[in-house]
Image: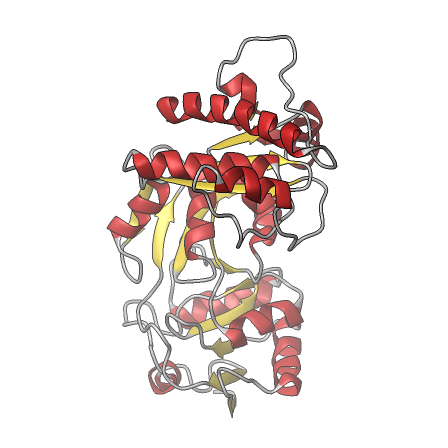
Length: 355
């Protein structure tokens, strides 16, 4: 039996030098017991065959049962999974980082699947980033035994079998992650645990509508504010409304004129702060409504697969006419803003009936 080095770490402020040492062990193919917010796991370099072989042997796990991958950023999922459905992106947005594992179609083997999770634990996240290699992390127990929720349980059967073990006390949640399989239709819950079935279903069921303009300071703000008002009047809590811009400075307030126009409708946007278009926003949105053709083109440059969910606002509302653009009122008179809002109101009124 080999010697396992053990180190105690503060889960909220872990020693960076020690983390770098552990990350180097993982990079070189070593096995390390690490904490997550759910249970303790055995981390290993997925790209190191000897490391994975040793992990299977230690756990006594069937070779046909793959290990799930841990990532430290949502964007990394595109490196490992393909054909990711909208519902999966909604769950990522709602529960990541956190105790949710998604089973998706794998990019790495034809017809295969991969389980992926983004842990909500400072030690685990830092190690993934520092190691710079794909990290798998099954629970730190022998197959068939309960998953460990504290270090003593984790090291009990694995002392001497792994190269390093981090003691960070009890895990915060103490339950294994819930698992949802999106590798085929219809999706299904494989394990209900830290996140309950009702929460998963509610997150998938909720519709997300995204309004997009250029600066996210006037037109998209007007559309969002007015639709939210209409939905509230209609008692609709099943739709989330968002807005963003394709070319803007983040954190800017709505324009003075936008605030004035909306205030006449009893809509307060004084707390609005602009945000730019991102893959996360597009990926999780059921419907994306833009003000002009140029914004549609910009979004398709970022995420071509959004095409079937992307519409001009007038087009979606079935407004007839040759010009489907809604002109930008920036720098124009208050009267121009009022006319812009009148057009947006007309479209949103129709959209509220469709939704």
